[in-house]
Length: 281
Image (cartoon, rainbow, N blue to C red; front, side, top):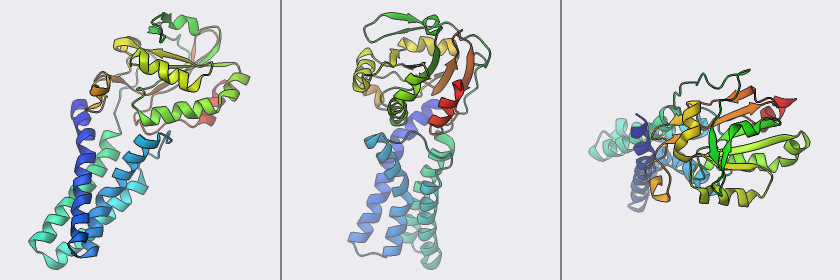
């Protein structure tokens, strides 16, 4: 199923563009503007949303149901459906089917693709010792998780530099750097990606945060948070592996005991900064 999702998120924007172009074509050919508007409205909200998060990488989280995307898409479909009921000709039926497909793509993205239905691992529970795992820094040096003990530490397992919501969340944490520093909280970011990508991200922020890479998802496997085929189809061309990691946040105390975790099943739904600040208070 994860492989199907990987293919879906690759094809979805392509199909939405096709539907929008159908609406533009209708406008250019002086067809019913209500009909053309319905076609465009059924596909454009999700297309704009995906374009925004990918291009600007400023959105760290969204609401679970994305009503600002879902409702306009549904409205667009209903507009074409009304015209089909009124005229019942072939062109109106075809347009209605295009709009319905765009709404279904939007619906599937919000309620099926975004929700991973992940199994909550029993290895990340409050009051348990953080399992021992190995990661590497961008210079190839191996780092053992036991080295995190001795300080209050917040550990982010993120999907990689390709993930726009992960990048926005890291920017958000970096912008609140002083609050973490003042409370003596170490911040660690771990992702299954190349040393080059990890190093570029670390250099971008140039803070005392630690950025590590998880080769072959070795650490993620130890924690049972591997996301099989979690990478959207096509991103392999950028040097990423098909298997990714579920976005996961773990907080440990000075003794290495877990005191908080966020194992979100929906990659768009993530904790607010205030929740993270409150962990160690």
